[in-house]
Image (tube, rainbow, N blue to C red):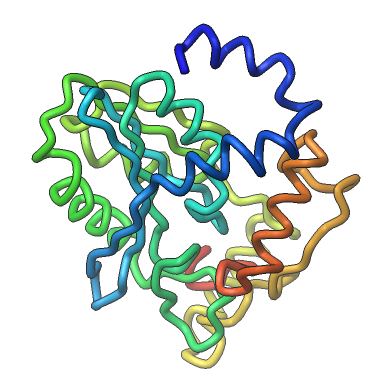
Length: 240
């Protein structure tokens, strides 16, 4: 498919999304490879990749909190057909990568630098040895901060809705007090933060992820079919 043909298809894809998702997109996603490496504290880190000998450019996608590479076939399809190799990594504690607590739905990390160390291992394993002429990063939500530690690998990065703060259900001083108290107690530091809990599917009408009903339904189906993908709220330690 040429870039012009791809761009023309965007005009009709929404109305034909089911046919596209169960046809062209399904066939395309069968081409992807899945791999893993062992990250900090022996946590397995999973990722997906699609590549071609004809490509000399790459885009690395860092999914947002609670997401997995299984959500990104359509994005990969478009970018791959524009001439890019695609790599999508599941961060520790989410997606198909290893979880750190007995309740796998708790959003947790021991140290934020663990994300960075995993990222560096992934870059060394898959990106630096391939010597791409251009390499870009696509990162939604809070993952843009991970990229700030690397000024050499990427020619540019697109940060979609980067996290610059946490929307707390209380005044900042009270929230900080609650988090500090929870962090000081070993039996509460790894609990769900106040007002959060296990993953719950939301009706389409109140979701804030997409305006596309068909894509949202597809997203919920993934989480219904693969409960290991589900991620609930963060722990106090993750927020702190």
